[in-house]
Length: 277
Image (cartoon, rainbow, N blue to C red):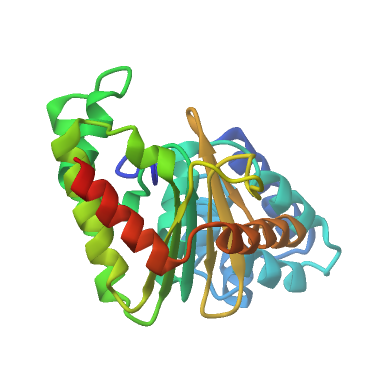
């Protein structure tokens, strides 16, 4: 919900991770390398290699690239990893996505369902979880509130990271949680929109063209120039790493920015909505 309902949940191993890990192990053993020898060549401890091979740890692209070089550059690992990266597994993928968020030099998010997680005030976070089914416990709600508030520090703690948000006007007109909650949302959005590293745009309710009818999306670029995307739905989330897919989503987001209101017009709309409450 706006950045991962289960962000504080412990990621669980998935069948696809175990299958990928077994594939890595088979290739390593075929090459005649121990875990320690292989780890030294991919700049990883033997324990980290074991975690990947046993499906307990999600591999990343840098591991796959290094492992390909050690294991013959057949392309088999890259193809297998592309399959793994598209498998649903909410807690697993969001934990990896949260790591990428913390490293990003740019972060883009489009939302059509609710306020993006990085922009949600505490009252809104609570309203979101009051609507969750099955109902969470009080402890689970508090953990989510703490996690969300900590995550928002990225906007202030990373002034050299460019953050861009596009939010549907309909999300604000819904008034989730009531007028007081919506007022706090608008106040916080206006506050964050005033930061130099944040662009906030509203997609107006009436628009003849729309580049992301398929739903919400999030994008990051790392300091190494790698690009990743993340999308989520009911009980699932997908970390997208395939270059052509990520490129297509970046193109959609770029078109969305041209279709949404400018940051200046968006701020004026937020102020008008605030005055109407």
